Length: 226
Image 1 (spheres, rainbow, N blue to C red):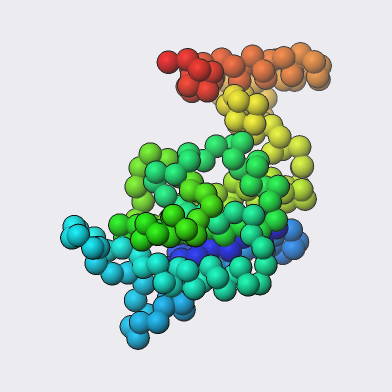
Image 2 (image 1 turned 30 degrees about the horizontal axis):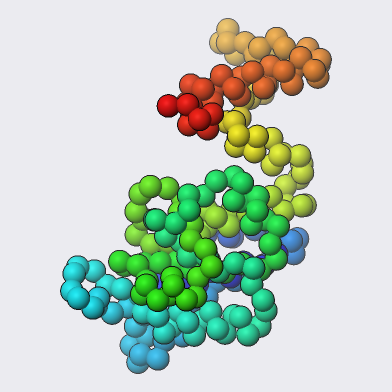
């Protein structure tokens, strides 16, 4: 897989991809993550990528020209399955969306900034818009890193235990059950006996019941409850 991220602040994305699972995935050549500085595609002498909004109003707007030039350059090198704009009013990121994107080959993630992008970008250049929550960030860089992380960890070979991602929260529409590790007793606080029994069927049933119980309590919306 290849993920190209377009941003006017590339340094914000250095850290998320230079450590832990995302770093190892790149080292193992399971994914290529390329960060593109939008300022390299502007024709303005001061490398400007934003301008005042027509019609007035506070805040600056990202211009269409550098975004179009960057996307056209990338598309001249390969075909892309999706060109995604990170937007507060996009489709809310869910596990099924991450699963779907993990099956793609090439993705572009466009990071918004300021008051957003010229609407013509959204009308003519973007194939999809994704939000990571009902709140506003200073820019789309952190949101792009979240999407990339959610997708990359699903790729075969990225996690040491390939079954791990299949038991994550939301994969079955429920949040994950409680987990424990050694010691089995600490300050009198004990691990549930069923987890020490070695009885796989009973353990599986316990995990499902706890997932359902926790989902009803903490995220009832996943069950269609109010």
